[in-house]
Image (cartoon, rainbow, N blue to C red):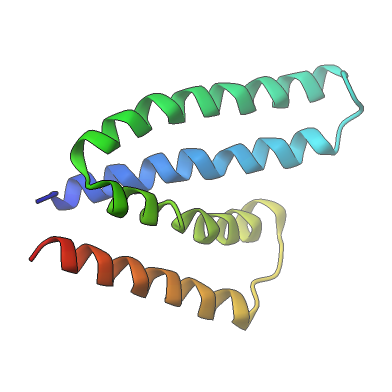
Length: 114
């Protein structure tokens, strides 16, 4: 059985994965091969490298179905990041979808702990 701290670590790893989208979006706004483009693209690769290392550690602590299902929260992280970093709107559909994702994760995780 995984501990609450392990679930927090899982979400931090998923947040690292979601942060790849931030730097990718920032890189897309720059001129190809400019310094800032290369900087953001390099950060994207670095974040993916860090994510891959930590993801392997997560897989040691969780059943595969729980770990991969939790990656769905990347969508929620994307909504949060879009709102706070890029000032994007959050619609009712986004909120309803997020609630459905969280409910599905809770159902799977509660079934695993029985």
